[in-house]
Every structure is written in C-alpha cells, then in structure tokens.
Length: 164
Image 1 (spheres, rainbow, N blue to C red):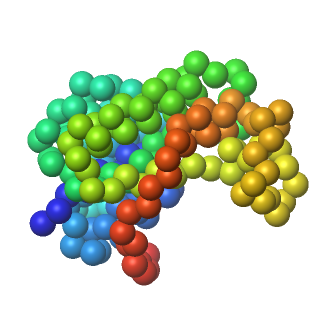
Image 2 (cartoon, rainbow, N blue to C red):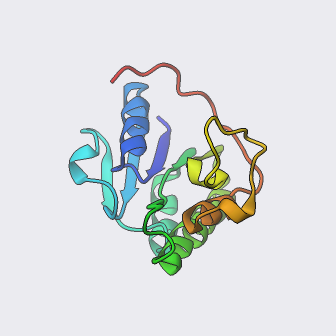
Image 3 (tube, rainbow, N blue to C red):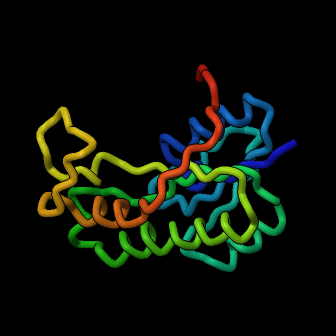
C-alpha cells in the first residue's frame, strides 16, 4: 500500500483530500500545526502528526519513516486581512515551509507533489480572474509568499471522484 502525506490536513481543503485518499485505499499521514485547522477535521483512519512544515527535522523524520509516494501540500497561511501584520510568519510558513517539503520530496524521490495555492496569488483583481493576471502591485503578503513557492508546477495522479 502506498502512503501519502497531506500537509495542512486539518484544514478545510486538506481534510477533504485526506478523506478522498483514505476512500481510495491509501495510507494517509496528516501534518498540521492547527494554526488554521482543527483536529476534529482529520478523518478517522489518517495518522495525525501535530507539527509544522517549518520544522525541517520533523519533515525529514516523517519522510524517512513513512516512505511517502505522494505529497499533497496544502499547509499555508492566507489571512488576507491580517497578512501585512504577520509578514514574517507568512513567509516562514509559506516559503520556507514549502522549501522544506519540496527538498524532502526530491531527496526521497517522491512520485508526485501536488501543491495548492489560493486566490491570493492573483491579488485584488475583479472576478472572474484570468490565470495570466498576476500583477505584483495587487498581491497581499500571503499571496506573494505562496506565489514565490510556485516554481515548476507538477500534477500527480488524479484522485478521482470522492463524495463526502
């Protein structure tokens, strides 16, 4: 059986991804610091680790112990109303944390890394938003920090349909 890591798995999107993976018969490890998610969101059957993507030692240990084949990186902080007050936290979590996750994926030859972001990378544009409309002057700090984590975009295998 293959094992997937879901960072931010106690958050809204992460718990749904974890649930779908479990429904597909996968082993799931959820890593979340609970700064924006809730322990009760983590689906039964997932192995929950309370910790942060900024903890490089913890990530190295988890990757070595669990031999992840897939990583779904949803751990990010995107409080747009507050982001300019907490820039250091946003950058540490969103940029440095993403770098730690990516480095471990490369080191352990993970089959697929699925990285998610938020609408914050598009700034304060009017909706609907074009994916080509990435004007820097409109980006809040959480959008800038998530956007700087982007680099090469890789998609993993589809999860299929999951009804929850």
